[in-house]
Structure formats: C-alpha cells, structure tokens
Image (cartoon, rainbow, N blue to C red; front, top):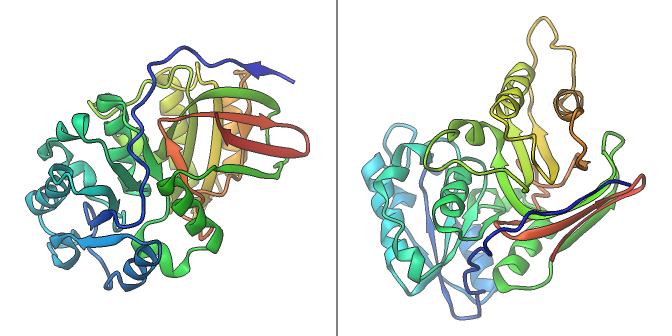
Length: 309
C-alpha cells in the first residue's frame, strides 16, 4: 500500500465552534431563492442558534438574489458584525464570482467565523483559504435542507459545534489504494477551473483535493480535469477525493468514458491514493467537509476511511 506524506504547511485558522445562543446569518451571494427558508430557520433554531436573515433572501435581479452590489453588501454586513458567528450561504447557482471582489474580507483576520456552503460557494472557500488561511465548511445549504439526509444535516451540526467527524464506507472499484495526510481543499470542479490564475486560486501542492459537480457534459468534465492537470495542479497532490458527479449529460455521439474513467485516465501517471463516490456534492447525503484542515485518508481494497487529524 502506497503512503503519501503531507508537506509542512502553516496551520490554518479555525473559527470558534458554535455554542447554543450564538447568532448565525443566512445570506444569498448567488442565485435568488425559490421559496422562504422556513425549514432552515427551524432546523438552526432547534440547534439552539439565533438566526439572522440577510436582505438578499428577498431580493431579485434577473436570476440573482439582488444585483452584484446588493449581494456584496449583504455578505459584507455579516463579515463586519462581530456578533455573527457563522455565515451560511442560502444556495449556490451562479453569481458569487461576480461580486467577490467587491467584498472586504479583512475583518475576518481578527474575527474569523465559519462560512458554510457548496457549489458556487467554492469561490468563497478557495478565496478565504488562499488569502486568509481560514477553514470553511463545505456542507448543506438552506435551500437543500428539505431534501437533505439526516446524516448530512447531523454532519453539519457536528462541524459547526466542534464534534468529531469521520467517514467510513465501502470502497469503490475504481479507487486507488493508499494512505495520505494533507490539508483538504477543493469544491466544485467548474468553480475551481473558473478561479484558476486569480487571487482566489489555490496552491494544490501537498494537498488532498476534493472535487464534485452537477449538470455538466462528460466532455466538459474531461476538459476541466485536463486543464487542472496541464497547469500542474494535479501532479503534486497528496490524495484525491471524488464526490458526487450528478445529472451528468452526454452528447448525441457518446463521449465514451464514465466520470471514473475520465479521472482515472488523467491521474494514472501519479501515485497518490484516489477515492471515488464520496458522499458530498449535489446529493441528498451531502456530508460536511471542513476545508483548510488536515485530514487522513486510508483506502484499502474493502474500505475508505476519511478522518480529521
């Protein structure tokens, strides 16, 4: 069994874990909401939290939850408010990359707080880690809560309140065995490609990369994975975790490879462990991952174990 060691990195900043009575904010930095966030508010209140709703939950500008300035101002409000202990993105969609450069994140240097979300929120995950070295949570968002599994919601609660998180499940036939330690980074593949070369981009060296996506064509997945590889980002990973790739489309003339085959073909020349079918992404059982924190991954012929060190 191959073992990959992690490179020495500067420890990331962990925001304070939540406790009952804390205030959390829900804001919408991307696409507008289809319905009120009643289920999310009820759930968060059941955890003993006070919920503050952003103005963007009721705004509409074309497909967005308000124009770029309004969405940036809403996020800025909660970044600057020290009484808010976590900021939860109501949904993804598209739009965060349009407003991120309008936001001043400097307050988080002295008052770090949890940011929660996935999909389009990958832009915020990568930006905060690359620029401020702050841990964030890739997990269920309010718009998804009505369809979310109980395990995914419990994993979010544990991540926010500082309880132990580890995942143990059966191995996928496409997995590549091995052990690795490294800081977990990543998110939505399309957004990782979109921020490449920008101030929100990541240094992948020595990291364990997580990727997921939804609604893309097979050829587009192939193109994005190969783009990351051609930039050298996949060469020096400690490990790779592949989450949900859902609602994937094909052309009239079939592409000819599955998601597993596409990724395996690209990373075959490297020797780090690879985990497929991890329960995170655009799936009901979207287990929470703390990005920016060191993890251990152990992949054998029968099981996959992901734990935080």
